[in-house]
Image (cartoon, rainbow, N blue to C red; front, side):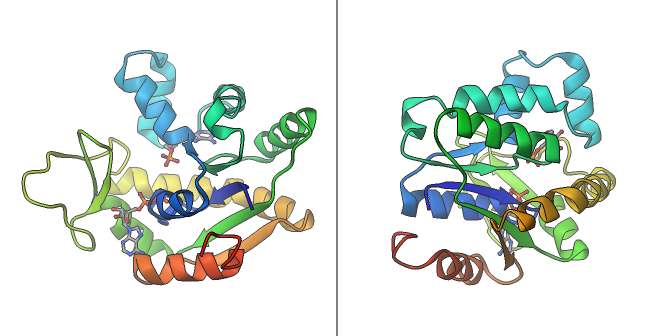
Length: 212
Ligand code: ADP
Ligand code: AMP
């Protein structure tokens, strides 16, 4: 289990769980959202894409496919990787499998984290990140230690979160059946504490293979 994908609506806990799983499996977490935010922060993201992100819309498939093609070639990803937030559309999924096949590789598993909408909104709206390290906190469920300088994502305003959830539902109506048909999909209940969810996740992946 070394090439994994995390699919899930905004606020489902993908980033939080991805970090824990990546430590266990000793593979890098590759988040297209993080990569796009880093490009934005360094002023390298074209203005029309900055606008799309702030509205909660998806950026074009070819942009994220190119980011993933480059990032997965880096040496730390040679032994595997966890993709967080990519693919989000069937064309992205097809581009990913074609790219891996051209390298003689394939995906091992696609994990869908499932959380009801009202909880997603609460998780995303109260999400904050450490400005210096990017570590994820929550104003109700995971308070930062004193002195940490926090920032809020531009797209974590409630109305934008609701739009992002709607966009997610629309795109996964194709994506999840696509992976289900390929026999790669594992659905995990994302309700509960971080520890409860990671316990389910590690169990579903098989304790030994998940590094237990
Ligand atoms: P995603 O990457 O899917 O958008 P995150 O991992 O950033 O989601 O989590 C969204 C917010 O919810 C964060 O503030 C995080 O601290 C919090 N969170 C994540 N998992 C849980 C959980 N199991 N219980 C409570 N809060 C959680
Ligand atoms: P995330 O951090 O995964 O919530 O992504 C934040 C934003 O980045 C999304 O709302 C999109 O605008 C953009 N984005 C991230 N990943 C993708 C992707 N795979 N396809 C298209 N847009 C993406």
